[in-house]
Image (cartoon, rainbow, N blue to C red; front, side, top):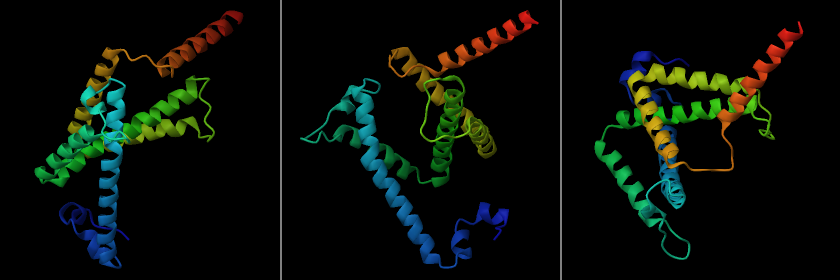
Amino acid sequence: LFVDREMLISDYNFLMKIAWFAPFVIAGIWGATLSSALGGILGEPRILQATSSDQITPKIFARGSGASNEPRNALLLIFLIAEAGILIGKLDVIAGNVTMFYLASYGFINIAFFLENWASTDFRPSFRVNRYIGLIGFIAALRVMFTLDMISMFAAFIIMGLLYYFLKKQQRDTDTGVVWQSVFSTLIRSALHRMRGRSIE
């Protein structure tokens, strides 16, 4: 079943018109919305609390309440952010920006997998995947981002770059290693092998 491009752009209810049973579409939308909302309420405050405990985000969000250490301060901030999104009243604006960050995250996860698989000897996943799938996924994510909105794509990269600079400035030392060290070591080792091969010839 093919849908006309103009219908996709202009008619927000096209799915209900082409569906076999329209109430199923409404039920699916409600289910996806509620599951995302519950996931955000339950998961994101805990993530913010954890990053605050690691002194990455403000310490005020690391405070918990009760025996289970409930992240009330973090939950309040998440609630305010969600309320601000609701008050904007334009789903297209919110969806476009959120989509860029999701695609950027998927793209960087794919390129990190490709670099780790190619350069790091410590990278031994139990589930084997060809490394070039990660590279293809990274290029595909960039392509989709560029096609959707080039300005939003660059804005997302600038924001993520600022976050990286902020974290780098804090100099958080971890025992997980740095992928770029493995990449540079692999490049140097490959260059030395080629130089040795030419000298033998």
